[in-house]
Every structure is written in structure tokens, then in C-alpha cells.
Image 1 (cartoon, rainbow, N blue to C red):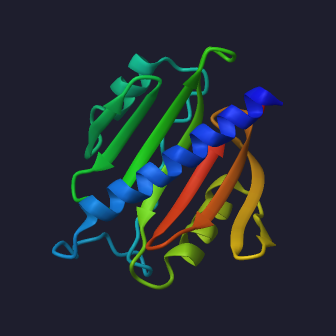
Image 2: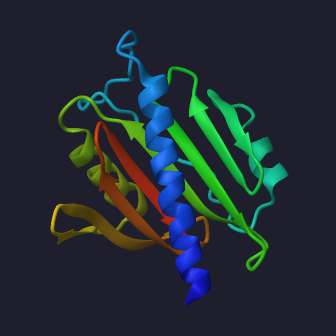
Length: 167
């Protein structure tokens, strides 16, 4: 129980950090987001579950993202500030167990577009879960050869898409 509490606290802190960095880096001066009807292009993170920090760095090396933080966490911000990717590593499963993509979402339709693209891409149906003011879209899918949990949460000018390997 204590380990889950610590992991949840770390994830919550990372999500807040990511929102702050996206808000700070996003800026209103670059409106050249790829347009697929919603103004957002789906980004697929590395799904090589169990990969080492160095393997994920190599996988990200040809992507238009800049490394921002490097320890047990890799944090990348897209060059134009419109998206970020977090990768978390855990010794218990010996490597990558969590990928998160955070999109800047100033235009309407981003949330519904990302839900639709995620459901289609991973052949799953996400269910809406609402508790008070908190809303999330959750489901499971076979991603990168493993069954993972998928959670999409709207934030203040962001939409987060999380993929995590359950223990």
C-alpha cells in the first residue's frame, strides 16, 4: 500500500510539473500545429516495456523533442512547445513501465479527437469516469506486446494520455 501511495504521489507531481512546463513553453506565437480536423496530431510514445533509459533515449533521438530532465524519468518537450512526453522507469519490472503524452489543448475538439484516435489505434473503447469535477476516460489495450491501462484526462489547456503497465 505504501509503495502504491508513493507511486501515485510521484505521478501526481509529474503531471503537475508537465502542465507547468507545457504552459510555460507553449506560447501563443506558434499556431502551426498539424491539422487533422482537430488541430492536433496524435503522438505515439515508445512502448518497449521494460526498456532501459538508454534504449528510450535512442528511440527518441530522431523525434522533434528536446530532453528536459534525466534521472529515473525522461521528460521530453516538443520543439514548438505543443506537447511533452514523460517516461518512467522502475526496477521492479526492470525498465520502462509508464509513458505519458501531454498535449497543449487550446482549441476545442482536442479531447474528443484524442479519445477517438486512441480508441481506433489500439482497438479499444474508453469509458468515461466522473467523480465530482474530475473526469477521465479509461480503458485497457494490448500496446507494445503487453496489456496496459490507458487514461485520458483533460486539464487546464492540456490533455494527458497515459499508458501504464499494471503490476
